[in-house]
Length: 308
Image (tube, rainbow, N blue to C red):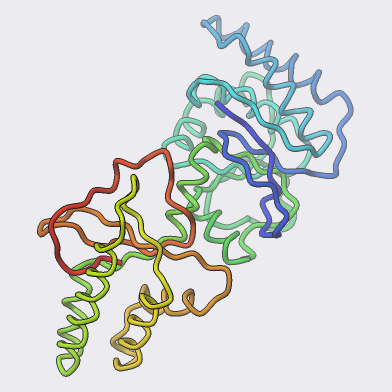
């Protein structure tokens, strides 16, 4: 497992980390937090009398140190959350301030149903633990769990569902890049083209022509390992010209968002070619580069309407 530290904000100079645990800076200082985390976790592990991961105590001290000093930290565990979660949970429960834990539903279930109840009962830790999609209140000083989708939606939109300046633990943060891409993706399926034609029968031919033109230009480009192709100014102009012909009520949210992003500066949009029932279709325009770890998600063959 890798671990790191980000500040949970949307500032341009915020650290970018691809790892499994991210801790954000905090200005509070707790003397001897590392020693307390070590001793508390050691007591718990001895009570359990079960085989344990040999680096749990070390990781607990490192996470506690990151909280105390307000520093970023990367930890590689090469293991699963159920193996190492006790380490960061011990430090988070002993930390006197609030902590935000971002984890998928499956990991949250493991923590809420197994690890946290056992740890809190054994060590008599009374720190509040809650889960949800919004910070409880300004006075909450406990451990709060939320999903990556909820947290990223709030952060990317500069929302106010979560306070800034909180220590943030992300597990597994190796998926942070993928989660972010999913949040930034806009999906426009072949069925959406058909629905658009049905909603605007007078422009059905123009809609089909735009779909065909986009498909032809994308398929004419040299193949790459990801089958992802940047949308050029001409591609966006084709969409823009089509949207200008359609009534606003007929344009779906994904196309409106694509239209707005196409007008923005510094946006990188591309279409992913994915094999469907009738062949390859440009899939989702995205605003981040294709993920290099999963080139097999994209395939190329056949033909049909573009998928955006």
